[in-house]
Length: 371
Figure: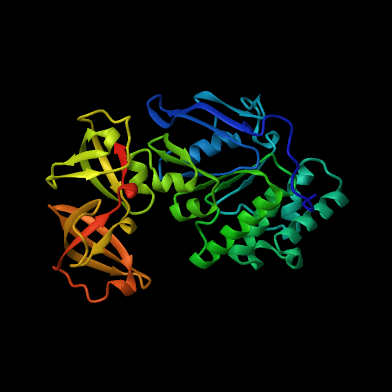
């Protein structure tokens, strides 16, 4: 065990774990989860991302079997999990607080799920040793949790979750208690293990950078629903809703009316001009939309730059945040807030109150429907 990647199980690899119309209601009124449907592929790393109270942890708890759905179904390789207790779902779980037994050594903690499955003592110890070696803690196998650092405890928790070869690995905000540097190290460690063993994984977090760094696909939760389920770069470049565009990264949103979607023409009444975006025939004439532009897509125009740019705004600078490698410029255009991210070396000497022109390419605008 843990010497070679987990083999592909029987069944459709594109429908390994299926969540269908899942709902969880408290007191008959409050929807913690409201109609979530997702399909995870074999070996995929999926992140449930959203703010507190968005339903991501409740969904994970129902997948794990810790909560019972009010309605809907969860299937693993086509088999329904309704009524199957957590310990019989063959899922490994890593908790935010590690949940290690304080009176057990590292190797005893890792061997525990094997012993609960009636593995022979010698086999359980051998597999636990190999699991600790995989996470780089073989030399600390006899230490108690209190004798390990936070990162080492998290590695023990990972080894324990992997040692019995689970079908699915569930990670409930496992890095939130770690400092920034250690958190980034553990992100790489988790991705390494996932790549090596190919276990279908669900990672819950409210940290968008973790989600963008680690995921094959991200499910963005809001108010008990999934607003978008897509690869990280699709989520970032083409958010499906206003919420997703706001929650992932920094954004400029301009309220516009569709003049001609096929030609990519939109009227922004607040700015008193027409803005251009890629062709989108699905937007009806007169439809209210948002045009989203990421701050790094905007650029400052010099006095000699031609006026014939794709989209140009007058811009009054009101604030500067220096990140070293880049500057985040805050300002207004026609009374609307605008943010521009520019290379640090290219924008030294800018002063608050100065007036500029900013522009962006048609391809960098993205239309998001209202509502």
